[in-house]
Image 1 (cartoon, rainbow, N blue to C red):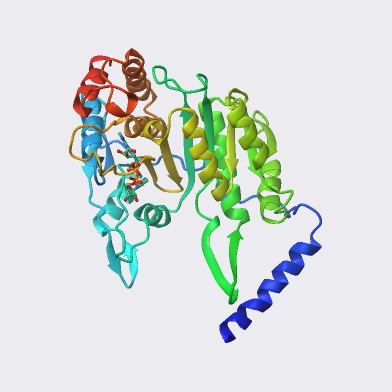
Image 2 (image 1 turned 30 degrees about the vertical axis):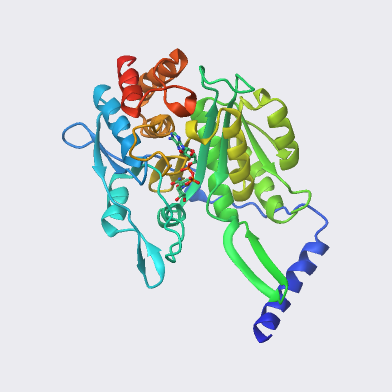
Length: 382
Ligand SMILES: NC(=O)c1ccc[n+]([C@@H]2O[C@H](COP(=O)([O-])OP(=O)(O)OC[C@H]3O[C@@H](n4cnc5c(N)ncnc54)[C@H](O)[C@@H]3O)[C@@H](O)[C@H]2O)c1
């Protein structure tokens, strides 16, 4: 009862403030100068052998099999990369899930990692390892491009969306409490700093991939203060990027429009708070055939981790049936982040050609080939 009382007062104060605010919140705009320059620029350097070292987290289940395909294809394509494999099996330290120091040091040293799927241990008191990685390296933006793949028929042929999700706060801040018995409160935390960082990154990403427009997806009509802050920062930051067109769209409208016809979104980078991005990015993945074909990048100030968004697929692990396309396409995003565009284009073209031919594809795409046979076909198409 006492605990309930101590929370009740601030809860009512919050309520009073939000009821009073009839206007969408406009923050006093003070640019965070540290984000004025290029956000999350890759800082790695080539070694004396002319190669970059990249941390490889092979992951669980099908992880090692699909990672092997990436290694084989990269070696055949002479990509100037040396892999540094690390184990991220979690341990509990003072009741918290932690990643081994060697793995953390490796990612910090190399500034970049490619990650296979990680199974979340059930019932051992661990939080999700993916969440732990995101927090450990402050990976503030999740980038999800979804592009139709020729040879894999879905209701739409021309999908080419890019969605950037704020990855560190919003509804996923984990601030929840019981106000009184039967009443719980969950706080959606939106800060100027995290919002500005992800918004600037969205503009810079749009410039780097040649998309002419950035659109904030929001619900500032209802969440006038939190989404209002995000939206109005977007408007202010847009002034620093006059070559990129800026607009905004309500989340519900965006969902309706994307599934009705995704093509008007092909020239835009969509940027949004955490929960909206989580849901909308899976919806866009569904438009191109699901999570098995969708790459992603988790971008941080110092380090970035690129990963397939599917899980460890324990049902097919060790059988040579896994499709490595999502991890491969995530590695292509990684090469682009590292400025290795020529190698990225060459491998990407070989992947798309192999899928379009449809002769050597894995079971999930309706084929009969094993993981290594598909990788072999990509190598032939290089
Ligand atoms: N990013 C990540 O590391 C991540 C994401 C999701 C789930 N997980 C973890 O993975 C484990 C299994 O999760 P799940 O079963 O819910 O989801 P899942 O994505 O592993 O599997 C769902 C279905 O898709 C198939 N599938 C997934 N990837 C495939 C691929 N590359 N090729 C062919 N088929 C593929 C699987 O065989 C399965 O039938 C859980 O421990 C979960 O916590 C990790």
